[in-house]
Image 1 (tube, rainbow, N blue to C red):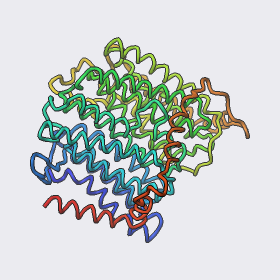
Image 2: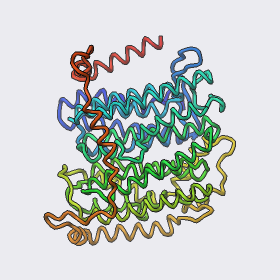
Image 3: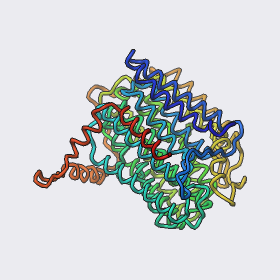
Length: 555
């Protein structure tokens, strides 16, 4: 296959963005149809590029001199995370009434480019373009301006650009596979780690994606969360590859593992104290992100493969959550509650089980963290039981077809977690572990079961039976179950088990920062007028300006 085909998925999305605008003027749904077809075409193109040869492909499109290249690389890691970006975006563009399908497809193309970039410089540039397009997307969707989000996004991009500059200065190149191991110094790793934490919202307090999923309309929140959330994990996986299978210090592994555990535990505490089902659902992404970070930070083959497989479920959650009609209790809401809580046989159950096993096997410190993660899991299950009786804010009707597709994928992936590990996660983990490889003894029983030294999950033998029983109960008694669990009018549900009083502190600080303003006599520039000038015009003007600058730069 020619190396130029590597740009085919990005080209499909870019073409869909160009065509969605004119078609959208013809009819309301034509633009969304074009963008959805382009997104699914990008998924098919990624499969067609990778599956026939299953070996890394790289294509350089410009040499900027002094070792700086604009190149695209498709390997097991970029293929996996490319699917984690494009599949949820395709679901949202297909089943959600997106306000601007053109911007949605364009943002997906930029996010995919940041994953397929072979070097940190191009990844940082593509990430900045993704943030800019999503900011325009939120403005078109009518989302209120958020100064804290803007500061966080700019800090993320600055850390990433700074890290790319330091990597080039130390190694003479910014390419992931070409940079020497000695170039991954603790300061460089710290910059990328901060960028990853900010980008994916891996913090013990209420992260940006949880706030967006609860406060914003589903049409505004779904796509930004789906596109931005996986990028931080992608950066941390790539640093394993650049560091020859390890981080510059074991303290980084332990610190990230502790951060992941605290993220999951705090999300579970907030979820069990949520005031509405939408509030409970909004904590699903940070809960999954905390477990994924714990597995990723272990630095073991089992932990890394588990994290990449767990990311598959975490990436689908935004598409599932924003399509659920959460204003009433329904069969889809019950199914989503079970998936989010990590009940068998869905993928979150299997992946969290493997995460705890990997943490127990790693060392004594992470074994204690596994106990806290298990507590977070139990709190999430208890919170799901409480959320059945909670009221919810008024929301749109959602899309039962989209919910069904996302929920069925997560349910089916639980029994088939062994096949998911064998086909997607293990190749990606093996490609970044360097000389250590992936010992077959770390994860066995594939593809019908996932077995490690501390236990196994017989996906087909047990998970398949549980899946059939669950679907039978849901289909046969969904009306009776829903009627019995539906809250009475005016019922607010039971009191939370624990009340985390500290959860509102970051929101209070951000609100105070947002209220700050420079006195009029000291204002020498009109930033608000500049912002209005940048965002009130046609987006295609700025796309044309960006392309013109790119052509001038590449000459």
